[in-house]
Amino acid sequence: GKAGYDWFMLKEIDEQPQAVADTLLGRLGERGEIVLDEVRISDEDLRGITKIFVIACGTAYHAGLIAKYAIEHWTRIPVEVELASEFRYRDPVLDRSTLVVVISQSGETMDTLMAVRHAKEQQARVLAICNANGSTIPRESDAVLYTRAGPEVAVASTKGFLTQVVACYLVGLFLAQVRGLKYEDEVAAVVAELRKLPDQVREVLAGMDEVRELGRSLATESTILFLGRHVGYPVALEGALKLKELAYIHAEGFAAGELKHGSIALVGAGTPVIVVVPSPHGRESLHGKVVSNIQEVRARGARTIVIAEEGDDDVLPYADHVIRVPRTPTLLAPVVTTVPLQILACEIADTRGLDVDMPRNLAKSVTVE
Ligand code: F6R
Image 1 (cartoon, rainbow, N blue to C red):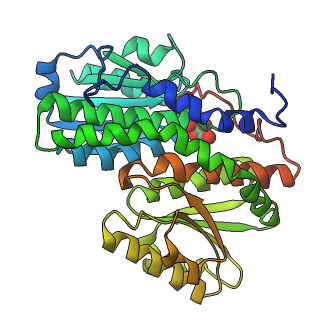
Image 2: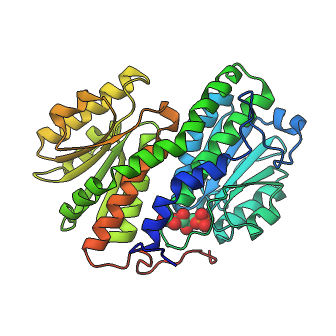
């Protein structure tokens, strides 16, 4: 049941601290190492990998986009992320030294399953990141890393997504560890940060009432834009997808750097623009560029809603609303910055009188191509 919540989605959003903790459970060793005994691909094979494909659909694809930033940084292996429905029909270049990581909450998505079969035919190694135990995709893959989010009932994925992102971090760090590349030292430092994530998600959820109130004020909008850069870009795409599917509002996610190449023409008086700001403690230029983007859209009349780290006061002059998230390393930030976007979409849809758990035209698992 909904355990007192109006919607399964709200319940599942609230379960995220536990879900993230469960994804990490037993997988972080005492010396700051990653323990993934369940990934039954030999160390020798893992050391021989020269290329990684990450393949998924919808929200899981956004998790894959985040994975690219992390895995390439930690392992220096090139990563390509692709929609499952495109991958199969494109004649991708794969061989024995390719690792294909497929991401699927349900483990039953037909396009993703077909990608698994295609990859196996080409002799690639296939690792599934999956939530539903014993589903088809993990059964057909060489190895599986379960996200352990528990059953997700709402059609829109929330805890499924957050745990997919965390599982991708584990895969990236594990590969860095096995391969012993120069970023190995970083593994232990990142592990310490991973351990903080469940409490940090809890902290974001504690500010939920304010975000819900903001959501109610956005319910009559016809277009809402989302901007992000680096890992904030897939977060922007995910925020836009949640809003489209739940509230039936036109929403688009943009790479903030692309604004000036066209999309800024969409910004007019009062257009809500939600901006995911990178940590000011990460690469300074990255933070500064996004702050300038907020300034640019505000100068054209946008109503700016800014998701920024605690203590980041650079955004204050240009933000109509600030949603605070705790400080994390840049690569891990999606785990906290996505949460307010889920709540916003949920609240906007609810205010519009829509069925949050069962949006029109959608099914929880898409078992047709
Ligand atoms: C959006 C959503 C969908 C799924 C997609 C893939 O909220 O839930 O976009 O992410 O259909 O589903 P899985 O992960 O089950 O393969």
